[in-house]
Amino acid sequence: MNIGQASRMSGVSTKMIRYYEQTGLIPKAARHDSGYRDYDEADVHRLRFVRRARDLGFTVEQIGGLLGLWSDRSRASADVKAFALEHIERLREKMAEIEAMVRTLETLADHCHGDDRPDCPIIEGLAEGDGAPAAVEPRAPRRFGTAGEQLARRPVAGSRVRGH
Amino acid sequence: MNIGQASRMSGVSTKMIRYYEQTGLIPKAARHDSGYRDYDEADVHRLRFVRRARDLGFTVEQIGGLLGLWSDRSRASADVKAFALEHIERLREKMAEIEAMVRTLETLADHCHGDDRPDCPIIEGLAEGDGAPAAVEPRAPRRFGTAGEQLARRPVAGSRVRGH
DNA sequence: CTTGACCTTCCCATCGTTGGAAACCCCACA
DNA sequence: TGTGGGGTTTCCAACGATGGGAAGGTCAAG
Image (cartoon, rainbow over the protein chains, first blue to last red):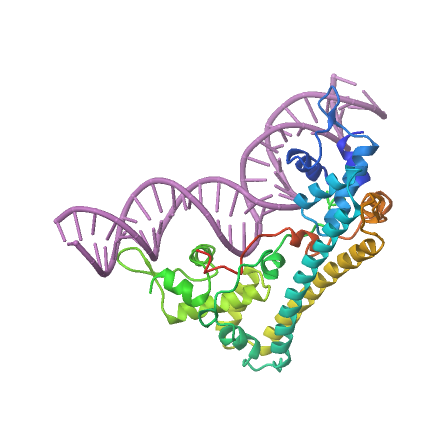
């Protein structure tokens, strides 16, 4: 089948299928004489695997590892479990960071009367708030970046395949 | 003061200070005869504001809005509060997405014995799991992208200024 | 044979951030 | 006065995952 149908069946956009192939996450697709990529059920199966892993927050690199574990019939289930548990741990850290943001913001918002007057503890909190970096000892490098950095991200993607 | 000192005092890297200036988030800095940028206390104050907002997960664009609210003495505190509450809402959505991932992964991991044998419900869940996109109706476009997409992000950044 | 849907390979943009190169500036020390 | 080292300037590129679009080739139905 052509890439479009594989896309529809897997839920991975054609753009991403080509990208995954190009970066080596998935093997190069077979080609028709025309040059069109040709996919079979196994390919679609793999693409679905990739998409589900992606939906669970694994990076493409990690998915490479998962694909390896998938096709390695000699690997122990403990290996997979460790992989998953580590990922869960990372997800929890991310959640904790966001939760901390929410708490801070709620505290600020709670103290803001939210009426027509200009005085606003939220803005003042941002302007004068603690955590003054000059007064703060160097924070240890964080393994996976601030959650804040993750929030500034990309628009519309739940609409992956259908989106065009 | 030079950019380096402003960076140290604000917790914003020199790179980012220049970037914020270039993109218009902050006004162009004054210059010495030498061409070096020149910052005063007010500039540092603004940079700190930006950094705190960033740490709370606001995008640079949103921070532009916040800076406007900050300097607009005629705006109502209600405006700021609405801004904050909306952001909190977005943070909560993000958390909920990640939480859903965690739940799914935990369910899978719970069913994995995690020993030397190769059978692994985690891998099988990825390979065969429900949510088969072909069988699923088009999901509505999501306003802020899947949380999964946010997780593939950047290394080391808590070490912003100290990092070099 | 035309039309339109599909496919191909390109390159570009996004967002926030870092890295590096080549050049220039400043200050202290000899 | 020379020199060295550190700070600074601008510019260009990369990351990761994704979408957008152009310019052209292919295919199947009419």
